[in-house]
Length: 518
Length: 74
Image (cartoon, rainbow over all chains, first blue to last red; front, side, top):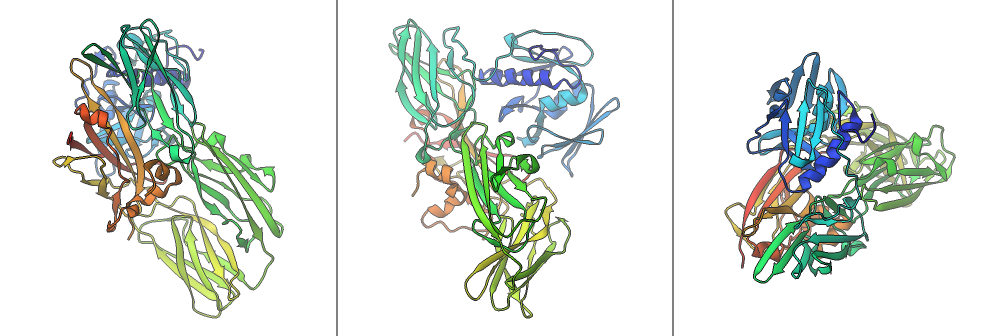
C-alpha cells in the first residue's frame, strides 16, 4: 500500500499518519470533527474530538466502547485499562506512556484530562485496537470500522502545499505547519469584489491592509518576526481577515493551520561546566534543551561533536537534552564540545564550550554518591567529596538543584545531603561537585551514577487571578499556585461570534512560568 | 522591564514574577508577565479563556485548569 492510500488495517502507521495530517487540516477549517464507529456517530458530550499540538485527541470511553472494547478507569492510579479480544491496553493519563499487552509504547503526545474527561490520541487507539480508519473530507468525519475492508483514495494534503482559495470566504496562507523566524507568508482571501479587506493575527500582528490583486481575490504579505525582540510563539495561530462592503463587515478565519515559533531552543545545564577543571577522565558530557512554549526540539536535528569528531550516533538524544560519555578515558588537557539543535520550526541553536581534564592532584581526590539511582520523595541524597583541606565545596543535581553546600568535617572530607521532595522531577541527572581551593582555583568532579525520581503525574495548578467573576482590563497578569519548581504552561484563547457570522477562536499568548520555590 | 517577546526568548520569563515591582512571592506561587489583550478582540466582545497545566520533566502533564474571563471593554 502506498503512502497515498486511505486505508488502515491493524497497525499500518503510514495510513494513520495520512489521516492525522488531514484531520489536523480539518480541525483548522473550524468544523467540528465527527467520529463514526461502525456506522454509528459518537456523541461526546461537552468534550469532543480536538487537536492538541497537531494531534487528534478523543475522549477515551466513547471511542473505545464503540470499538467493542471494555473500558475500566482506575481513578486512584489514573490508569485506563481497555480490553478487546486478546488485546489489553493500559494508558497512564497525564503521560505519553502506554502498554499494549504488557509492551511499553510511547505515544506521540501525552494523554490528559480536559474538563474532567480523559482524552487520548486517536492514532494510538486505532493502531492498538486494529481498526480500519478512513477520512471523509466532505463531511469532516473520521470513520472507524472494526470488521470491514474499506478504501478511500482521497489525496493527502501535505505540509507547505498552498491551499488555493476555491470558494467565497476561503482564507488561506501559502504555508502550513510550524513556521520559523523571518519566513514570508502570503495570506489570500476570496471574497466579493470591491470591498476593503484587512488582516490581523491576534497576539502577533495589528491590522494590515489587504490588496485586491484580482477580481475577488485579496492578499497580504506578512513575515514572521526575527531577532531577540521578535520572539513569538503561537500554537495553532488564528489569523483573521475582515472584509468591509458598505456597512457590512464579514470575518473569516484562516482555514489551514499554522503555528508560529520564531525563537530558537535554549541550551542550558552544560556539563562539565564551561571552563571547568575536571577531576576524572570519563565524564558525562551533557546539555539540556528548552524550547519554552515553542514547537519543541527535533531530536533528529541534533548534532554533537567532541574534540572535532561527530559523536552524535554515540550520544543519547531526547527532546530535552543530549548526553555523551567517552568510551575511553580522556587525556589531560582541554576538550571541546559543540552542539547544534533546531526546533520543529527550523530555528537553530548552537553552543560551544570547553573544559579541561586535570591530572591527579590534591585538589580533588574523589567524589561519590552511593545511593540508589531511582529515588522517591523523602529519600536522602548523601555525597562525599575528598579534596584539599581548607577550601569551599558544593554540589549540584544536574541543573535542577544547584549549589547545595558541602561541609568539611574531617581533614578534606566534605559531606552534603539533599532530601528529595515531592516537587523534584529528576531524569537521569548528573551529580557533580564544585570545589574552590584556598588559592581561588575551581575544580569539579562527577559522581559515577546518575539519578532519577519516579515519574509521577504533576499536580494541577490553580489560577488565583484573574477570576471568572472579576472584570479585567488589559494588560493582565495570570497568578496562581502550583507545586514549588513546577513548570506551568499558561495559554490564553479567545473566541467571539460576529453578528451573522460563525464563531472565531484561537490563541493570543502561550507561555511557561516556573512556580516559586521559596 | 523587558518586553514580553524578550522574556520569551531569553527565558527570563521563567521567573517573570520577579520583574514586577512589589510582588512578594511565596512557595509555589507563579505569575506571568503582563499580557496585553488584543483591543480588536476586546472590541468584538471576545471571551478569553485562561488555561494552565503543569509539565513534568519527562513529558508528564497534569490536568488542565481554566478560567473564563469577563473582560471590560473600557
